[in-house]
Structures are given as C-alpha cells and as structure tokens.
Length: 333
Image (cartoon, rainbow, N blue to C red; front, top):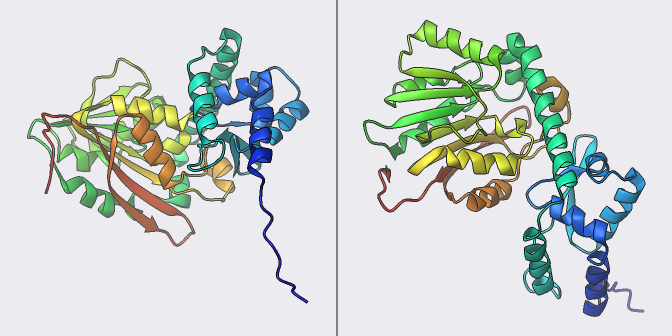
C-alpha cells in the first residue's frame, strides 16, 4: 500500500475568494490603513478603533488567513503588521492595488488622533524609564550589550568612510556619552540629542571629564523637524526605544545631509522578554530585512553591515546606510 502523504494544495480560486472576503469589510480596510507604516497589538487596535478586543481579534484572524497581515510576538504581546504582496501569487496584483488605494486615502481625524495617543503612550513609557533609571544606566545597558562589546567594530565601520575635514556628526540618544569622545576626535563638531534631561546630564559629565569642547549637548527630540542635519548620524542601541521605528528611521534620514551616512547599531530580533522591564525596550530587536526596507522607504541606500554574536544570546547588527547625492562628499576607502 502506498503510504506517501500528499501535501495539500490550495485552490487558487479559493485563495482569491478568501482575499476578496477579507478585503470586503470596512473595519478591516481601516485596520490595513492604520498598519501602513506601523505595527499594533490587539489592545492598541481596539483603542484606536474604539471597539471590543474580541471583534478586533476576529478581524485580524480573517486578515491573517487571507495573507494580508502577519503577526510577531513581542514578549507577552502579539503585534500585527501588513504582509507584503508575494510575487507570483494569485492575488499579487490585487494585493498591490489594494495597498496603493488604501494609502491614498486620508486617515479619519478621530482615528489619527487615537493613533497619536497610542504612539504617545509608547514614547512616554520609554521616557519615564530613562528618567527613573538614569543613575543605573550603565549596569542595565550591560545586561544586553554595553558599548565595549561593539565599540571596536563600530569604529572600524566608521573609519572605513572618509569625510571632509569640516564634517559634522550627530549622536542620537548618547546615553552616558561614552561614544562622544570617538566622534569628537573624528568630526569638527558633534551634537548629542536626547529628550531626557537626566541622560543628557550623564553625557555632560562625560564631556567635562574628557574635555570635549567641540560637543554640543541638545535637549531635543530627534524626531523634531527643525534639527539641522549633519554629515554623519550615529544611533547606538536606540531604535528599539522609539514608539514607531519605521517612522523614526525616516526622520533620522532627514538628519543626514546629502552624501552623508547613517550608522545604526541595533539588536537583531530576539525573544528575551525580560529586556522590556529591565532595560525599557519597546521592541525586541529587528530583522535585518526590516531595517533595509525602512531605510529604502526613507531614501537611504544600504551599505556595509557587520553582525556580532554575544555570549548572552543576543546578536548585534551594525548597519551603514548612505544618503545619495550627485555631489558626493563621501567616498569609501
């Protein structure tokens, strides 16, 4: 007797019918619109759309089964985001057309306001953490990845780039300022941006100890629109603290001058949930493809990348993204 098992096949017409059914309900379309450049948990979506959690869960299940959204676990919570259209799939053309049409629609004012409120809750939780834990910053940072664990690799990546003598740099979220001395010796002027007075004071003390007279400390949000750009922007272990990482990367790209560089040191995706409570992390790292996708949307070009495995099970990605310009002032050695 032939016992070979057969892999069940999906009828293309059935898949197409499921897709059309999932996209044929107004609230599901609104959810897809809200997920345009973000990911949300069930409770957040219930808050945004002022509806019950069970109803939102049902709609997300239908969207997931139709391949319109995908989920990922962030500790004890599950977050949902859009699925990208799959090449050669039955519904690829419809999928692309649906997302393009949705993104052309204005988000209703009441929904946009509740989305901003959810983002504000995330950002406030992160800022509250750093205000409480500024005095214990270094020990908590060392639980995952302190600067000594990636400093040499980051410097090698930075020194593989050549900038003009008058080049400037920005470090976003400098922590206790440990990396500012390295930037100070390589750039004419360095600005350190942080929205936490407590953390900025730690950086100030470091600057005083090392006599870093070309470093300017600014109490500012890196997502503000009025910050003067620099030739090089460095973001060390900060992106996972932003409320909306994809949106944050777009803003960070605006801080980079044409022909400049954005250097990001970040955790690869992991499942060590304790980092949320112990270190104030909003997100458990990122896939390398995620950062590349967001950078592309921000008009940046992925360049050199380094990956470091740590003994505690974490992996760090060091990424260089270049901002194109025909009058390039940056060359590779």
